[in-house]
Length: 604
Image (cartoon, rainbow, N blue to C red; front, side, top):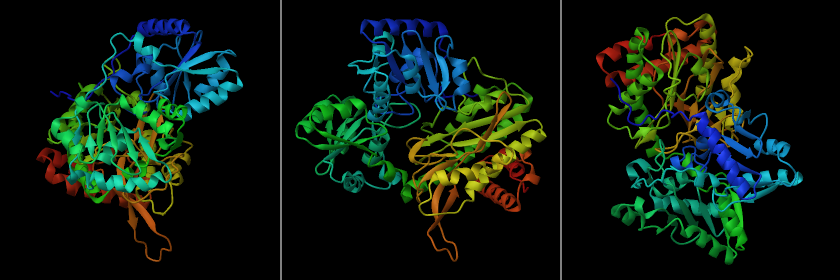
């Protein structure tokens, strides 16, 4: 009935392939006189979604998560993942080949220090590591007399016989009606942040696309063009991008305010800047060590700091905010149609995790504005819902029956990016499930209702989402919220709500509000809306105060709510939110869905 256009399901990588590939890599390392090799899940821009040709970690190990790191030695190998993937990694790799480890418990550099012999030579590809990463490794390894060796070519690339080609996605101009500000205006605002540097080498494609008002099609789910940019203190910027990505009209529009060059010119230009003794600003989060070291070797002065566009990009202008609100209304209507359909179809049987994900994408496509899904849909039933970043495969695809179903999904529209999670029960909710669900809901409401003074960071708010769980001796192992871009990445920094969220929240920032709880082997719960930081007027306030505007519109499953655990103000918030959902979405859905929506948003 439903057919997904964008949804991609994980291809199973046979463990036999991993064994042969690991053996071949070790032989190549030995040929080059190396004792080990570092394999991050990264491309030359540290993107979350990388082109297929950069999925070296998946090719070698079988692990398909969005973050991971492997270390290969002659007699041992390990793969490191964070709390999102500790369950998934064990199901995808051969633990006889790669020891799966939680990076919170032991880091790759610590493991390498413990397992590599003194005098060992460990190779790395300087294009897929930042200079800060390499400095941390080099400092720790030097104490063990272990040498880090930069390589001219990644040895995996030579072994990967059917490695996909570099992407050549077309670049488009992002219209001003969505961007809200011209590229020239943005460039002018960015230059003061260079301070006494001669130029900034921009390596984050999200920042470049935002600054120059372009979008691309080089990676799945995020409309970016893989490129680098040179932002000088004076004069026209330079965009280093493959010419094949530029149609004549796009090229003409860009050449009005910048210079276009081939990516191969970047090393030469950095070398020349180094010879002139220039100070160049590099992004600490994304700049390849290769570029930083090229400038330094030529005599230049690299300054590794924040990308000048990172914070301005995070603070959305009025047109971007209006677009986000409009996108969420359309997206909410599509999601609500799916939830109404699911509530009828799931109890009948026959649904699977994959078919449900395909159905949701179809409902989104039917609104006519969908450009892509913003990340692979997490469609998880039962025990799979307890894996925070579960990705269904054809092998793991569960039939949906009585129990908990969690769906975390999002969409890319020209006017905004969405991300929403709902958890529903098929059948009756147990008393335990209702308690856990309600405690997660209390945390969600606490963030939604939060008031805080100017200067407060996401780290200071994170505990709001956890208090009700902590009171029952429970918690979750991911952040409470991440930043979201404007028709860009669904995971945007520097803003976030987490224990590590140090950036002060400012009006115009968009973040997710997504506390959860995961009971391994049984079920998982996550409740996510997107919110906008906004100014709040409080009578008698002595400081500038902020709060959140919730822009996601979709009902929560009231069948999972224990009203007795909610305070009066929490019940009032939930009823008011559901009234807004009902009022806004009812005119946009069919009569059958409208009837379901009235019941789903009933007064509690």
